[in-house]
Amino acid sequence: MKPSLPPLNWLRAFEAAARHLSFTGAAGEMNMTQSAVSQQIKSLEAHLGRPLFHRRPKALELTETGMTYLPVVREAFRTLTRGTRSIIGGHANVVQVQSNLSYAVFFLAPRLKRFYERHPDVALNFVTDIWEPRDLREEPDVEIRFALSPPGGHKAIRLTEDRYYPVAAPDYDVTLETLTEVPLFDCANMYSNWASWAEEAGLNWPNPRVTYATTYTVTLELAEAGAGVAMAHDTVARGRIADGRLAVPFAQRFPMGEGYYLITGSRADQLPATKLFTDWLQWEHRQAAFTAVTDQTRAGA
Image (tube, rainbow, N blue to C red; front, side, top):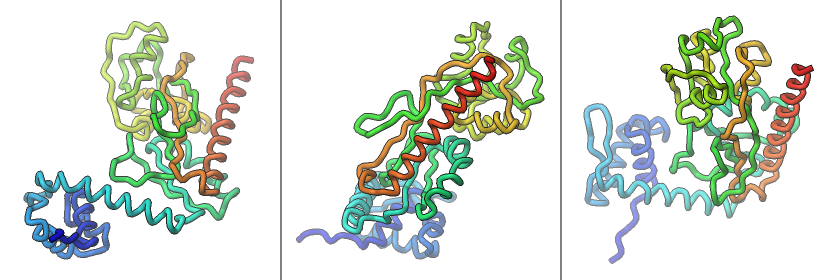
């Protein structure tokens, strides 16, 4: 006799509880009571004949069975989502966009008004992870990924050729001689960082202490508040420099190895709204690059 499959709502409750490691968090997401989620998990555990969670005083913890079963359930949901989309075609005017938080805040958000003015019938849904996409997430229509090179197996277009350099509040008092004596901030896991900038600038760099954050959203806010000097690059800093919220205290700016890549999902070519968004995004980056070159020419003049 073949084993029967558990009800879909039990599996949804399990996946949500595993993601939040909380019945309360899962309940909020699913618009259910905490006790209802707990009961569905108990029913699923009884169906499987094994516990899926250790109930700790302050949090849940997946059992070995739970850790084994979770990727199976997630893949099943992804398959269902893709299969359903292939039949009904999704929402033609809704584009799922994924990027890191800094790109969304510093580049996309200030420009999106122009996109909506041109295409008022297109809706954009944003997901902003700090670094890489979580395995849980279904494939987005568009992803903007920050990397040294484009990921293999995807259609990717490089959007930026940035320079990187220190930034600070306009009235922040710092010189190359005093730089290592003031608080320094940087985004973690970067190749274009304080040490590489100092080396390219030919500075005597006694390995000063640097405070790291997982996103430029934190480090540039610290610099703007006058707390110290942050390493930055064009895409995240250009707008705040232009409006006077940040200043570039030194002339040394160097080409950045990392860049932002535009990656389109497998069904992107089938969706007119996705093409409208990607065409607009590439146009915005061309405009930003042109403005930067023009500003440099004027400064040189």
